[in-house]
Amino acid sequence: MIERKFVAQKIKEFQIEEYIKQTLENVGHSQTKMIKTPLGEKITIYTSRPGLIVGRKGQNIKQLTKTLKKKFEMENPQIEISEVSNPSLDASIIVEKIVDALERFGSEKFKAIGHKIMTEVMRAGALGIEIVISGKVPSARAKSWRFYQGYLKKCGDISNSVRKADSQAHLKTGVIGVKVSIMPPDLKLPDDIEMVDGKDALVKEASNEGKQEIEKSKPEEKVQKEKPKRRKKKKDESKGTKGDE
Picture 1 (tube, rainbow, N blue to C red):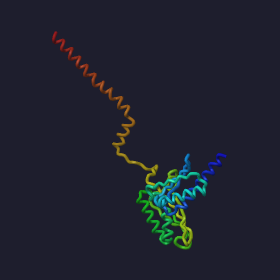
Picture 2 (picture 1 turned 90 degrees about the vertical axis):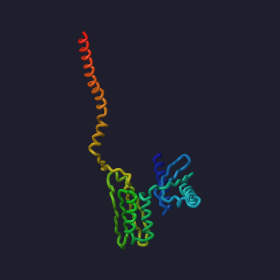
Picture 3 (picture 1 turned 45 degrees about the vertical axis):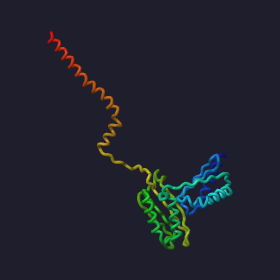
């Protein structure tokens, strides 16, 4: 019974996220996170244009809370909006830009749109980007066009950290699918190697591995140097006593 409750809750969260995604079109919507709190359900919407979601005097948020209460039977939904720091590195925002440009200018200028957005993402500091546009572009026969630049991982554990998003553009000729994959700049690759000079490497090895040996050897050297000095002093004292006699 407990498992069914968890499954039903996750399905409800997915339906709410999809509804918010559909209602907030052309607003720079990135993602939606839902957390259950003692006061009620906390919904955080990440976007690049928070002013459009809030609306005039918060009218859009008030309307959204009312619809969520009625449609999904939520007790006390609390909506928070947070701005995305770098929208050029967010895959879902980039997909929305491509779809909006295709619906506005048509499928004839898909190459210009793809190259423009690709250069914009690479200037933002991304390691790599891939854009796939598939559909009746530009002829009546369906094709798939691929725009790529930089370095992009497609297998292994690191590929899970690649930001991916997909959407559809509805045109007169038909539906065009758009997929975007972005490799963020803060992703650390396993083959990243930092070259160090030979002197620096020797100093690091001596400091890390031989610290204890150096500290132990220092007092022994001091004792060996001090011992012969004491012996010389004793010999001089014995010579002086014999002359006095």
